[in-house]
Amino acid sequence: MTAIRLLLVDDDPLVRAGLSFMMGGADDIEIVGEAADGGEVEELVDRTRPDVVLMDIRMPTVDGLTATERLRARQDAPQVVVLTTFHADEQVLRALRVGAAGFVLKDTPPTEILAAVRRVAAGDPVLSPTVTRQLMRHAVGTAADTRRARARARMAVLNDREREVAVAVGRGLANAEIATGLYMSVATVKTHVSRVLAKLDLNNRVQIALLAYDAGLLEEEEHEGH
Image 1 (cartoon, rainbow, N blue to C red):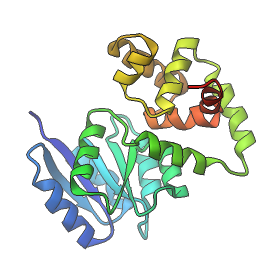
Image 2 (cartoon, one colour):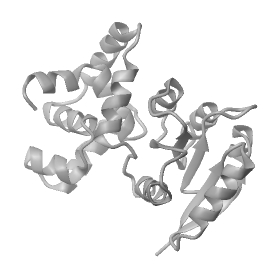
Image 3 (cartoon, one colour):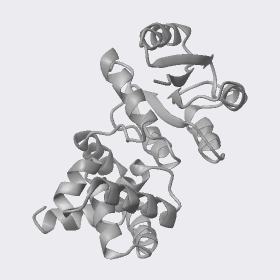
Image 4 (cartoon, one colour):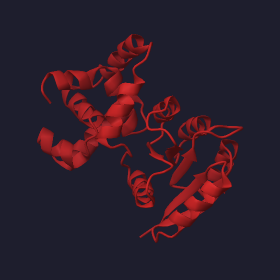
């Protein structure tokens, strides 16, 4: 089995040391580099070719949001998991919108951080349904009406089946759960997810979830009794 190549980015050397000790002990994870600021990330990514970047949000020179946005704009970009001390911080939402695959709290148990890295490396988001709903509620702000209109216009390019899959992704369901609920194979779900990502020009499932929420589709599902 090929080890997951992991890059650690945090301005606190003690945090980096702790993460390196914890993650480096796993047989399937290889720490390929460390950075103390977001400004170092792109050069390190070019040099070390990580699969996943574990990225602190708050750093003094170039923050994790900016570094994530720069990375996700590149071809063959690594997946990014943001590190935070807050459950529903506005910067976390912004990081997810620009392409982070999820987030973990700094006080998360080591086994869960390891699981998060493995999930992201496998192409799955790191947001439980509970955390997803919390973030979605937090996303509602003064620009909600404008954002909803834009989101609905973007979602209009999807056909009915793709829309159903997008809503299911927004509810935090895994592919197998979506397959059961919509009576299709897991392979078909994956195909629909890929088409949704391509049509909407999105990076990952988290962005599908945020867009579905912005468009009001998750509220419609709740009103219909789902």
